[in-house]
Structures are given as C-alpha cells and as structure tokens.
Length: 318
Image (tube, rainbow, N blue to C red; front, side):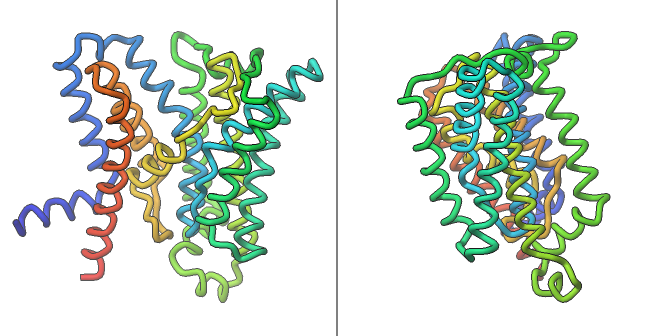
C-alpha cells in the first residue's frame, strides 16, 4: 500500500508525464478496441475537438495560476458566437462580426476581473453569476434560434491546411505563444508569484489588481475566439453553444498540472489534458457507450486530478 501511494505521489510530481502516460494508455487501448481509431480522419477529428477546449484552457490556466477561476467560459463561448453572427448578419460585414465576437469575449473577461478585483466578489461566485447572465443574453438576442455564421470563421472552424484542421494549427501556435509568455516574460512570472504568495508579491511592488484583471480579460478573449471557432465549424451560432465546456476546460487545466491553490501550472500540460479529454469523448463514440457516461467520466477525471494535486502538495509538505 505504501509503495502504491509512493508511486502515485511520484506521478503527481511529474503531472505532464503522468497525463501523457494516461493519454498513451487510452490510445493503445482504442487502437485494439476499434478498427476506426487509427484512421487519419478520426485522429484529425480528435485534434479538432481538442482545439477549442485547449485554446480556452490556456486562458483558464493563467486565471487559476493567479488564484482565480472562471466558470463563465462556456456561456461566453455562446454569447461571443451569437454577437459575432448577429453583427455579421445585420451589418453585412464579416470583419465587424469577427471583431464584435472577440470584443464580447474580452468584455466578459474584463467584467469578471472587475467583479473580483474592484468589488471583492469571490471569483467562483462572480463567474457563476456571469455564466447565467451571458447565456441569458445570448438567448434573448436570438430567441433561442441559431443564427447562420460563415466566412473566415467557417474556414478557421472547419477548414484544413494540408488536411490538418486550421483550429488545431491555431491551438499549437497559441500554446507556444502563451507558454513563452508564462515562463519568459516579467508579467508571466508575476502571475505565478501572485498565485504562490499574494502578500509577498504586493510587498515586492506587483500590481495584483492589474495582473488579475489582465488574466481574466485574456481568458474572456480566448473564450470569445473559441466561440467563433465552434460557430464557424457548425456554420451556425447557437445560443446554447459551449454549454458544459467549462467542465472540459477546467478538467484539462487541472489534469495538466495546474494547482487549484495557484502559483503552479504548465501550458504544455494543459494541451495534453485537452487532448486526453477529447480522446475520452472520442472513445465513447467509437465504443458505442452512452453519452450520459461522458458527464460522469468528466466528474471522475476532475476528482482524480485534484486528488493527485492534493497528494503532491501533501508530499511537498512532508
């Protein structure tokens, strides 16, 4: 028993390796369990499905590293898509629609940040409220009816370059940029410092309110981008788009090694976590398992990831 606990703790200390091992294990199992898994079309589809979760999770990771959390990302995805589609339809301008969708996500992020930094509302409660507000606004704008959405957004959401989904390529580019930002820039180091010890960071001259506002704004902007990609893939902006995505996003972040207590996280781990979540969803489809079990599995994955994090922190304390 002690050896088993020790092994699990060792895995927790190298979260990227442990999640990568789980990803490989699921992939190996599916390669034997399904004749369709290794087909290029299916593998590319897994990458496309992971891309939106991963893109939004990049922003969520920075929020959590800075000791916050954003539960509203799923609704922001839907609202941004709806605003972009409605503006494109009413103005006839694709540019206005795309900019409007991204601006909507950014605005939602700024509101979340202000509620946390200026009004001192716990981010869990604040973003739980904006989750409902954003979804309600999207439904009011459309009456619950999807709005057609195409053009460049459709290319990003459903297009391919050399048979590789554009959204997957965009995910890779953004992951590289955010990784460099998080580990190589002063602001990135300040985000980690705030999450590790806010009081010490304040005494060191770090503008905690500005940094937290920045990470929430960035998270909202990436959620807005995710909404445009999803709507483009479907060529339609549904007000219910992104519903439940907050679970996938948070699971990917925690699986990737980001501590809920803040101060520690890995952008590479976030990408691996998003790929694992997409692979699990793909497994349910290939194996013909009820979609209801997907919801159960997501909850179990989150509990498992948080448990690993708890074991790691307890091991560090010892």
